[in-house]
Structures are given as C-alpha cells and as structure tokens.
Amino acid sequence: VQNNEENIMQTLDNKTNDYLIKPFRTGELLARIRTALRISSFDTDNTLIECKNLQINLLTRSVKKNNELIKFTATEYNLLAVLVKNEGKVLTHQYLLREIWGPGYINQSQYLRVYIAQLRKKIENDPNQPEFIKTESRVGYRFLMKE
Image (cartoon, rainbow, N blue to C red; front, side, top):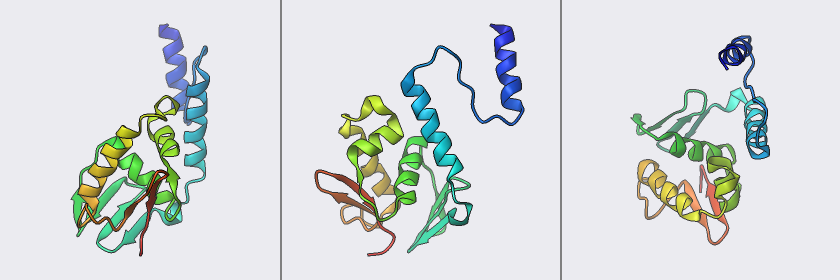
C-alpha cells in the first residue's frame, strides 16, 4: 500500500491532473471525465464576468457584490459557476443535480431548491424578485446577465 501511494504521488507530481486506482466505479470514471472536459474547454478570456453590481471571477473563484467579497461554500460556488458558464440557457434540475452532486442525486430536487435560495440571498438585491437566477417552472434554472 505504501509503495502504491508513493507511485500515485509521483504520478501526480509529474504534472498529471488525476489518477484512478483499479478497481473503480463507472460513475466515478464518468465524473472525472466530465471534470477533465470542463477544465480542458475552459476559456480563459471569459474568466471575469461583470453584470450590474456583480463580479464573478471564474479563475480565482471569487464573487463580489458592490465591490464586497462574498463568501460561498464550495457547493454554492460550483452551482453558481455552472449557471454562469451556461448564461442564458435553461439548465434542468436533473442536469444541475448530476453536475454538482453526482448521478446518484438526480432525484433530490430539494438540495437544489435550498442551494438556489442561498445563492439568491447572497447575489440578488431582492431574493424574492431575482434578476440573475431565474426559475423556469418545472424545468430548471437560468442565469441571466441582462433582462
């Protein structure tokens, strides 16, 4: 076991992004592939998103509202980042749950409702009248930079 851990650390130190030990679950492999594809297709020209009083820096994982830094949990930030990267598109409940929590959570829509409410409290001027995160009834959510 010790020798195996040393091999893994050496592999990762040699500029490898990830390492998967056999036997592995198919779901874990697919999640790692999705992550690798997201990272590889990341457009560094669009790392700073500014809309109204909100600034989202996808490179530094920071969000400012009225020039004040807002603290997010990892899950809150990941959810916001997925919404922002797909600005204008309706993202279904199942898609968001799979992307943020994994394939085993696609029927756990209460998770999504709670986290969307938390995001709205942090980034919206009036969470009851959201400007950025719009609900698409019975479908999902959409992030809008401008109305």
